[in-house]
Image (cartoon, rainbow, N blue to C red; front, side):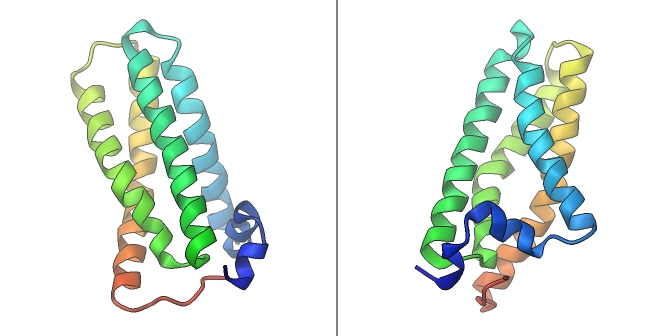
Length: 138
């Protein structure tokens, strides 16, 4: 257990967040919460809602676990890479080909776009960690 883990994970995230990063964290929290709530109200997308919800629960558990084990390091992005890459592909395919109400399609596209931006950072952070940049980000 590192010194920074004495700070709760959500506080550690916001320690780094300034300006646009604070906005981005709030946007992601909004998208993670609202997307399954929108999808659950249509019979055509209820399974999608469960998939999004469970993937995001697994992501939160995984990131908290990595934080507890090694602290706030770039390796935390690997959880998004592992869980959100397949979710991104799934949502894009569903939004393009699935029969669903327009609001559900828009929610899927909005969340897929959010995931895409996050994954750019996450692949970069994971690569930087694997290449030796292992210092705490706090």
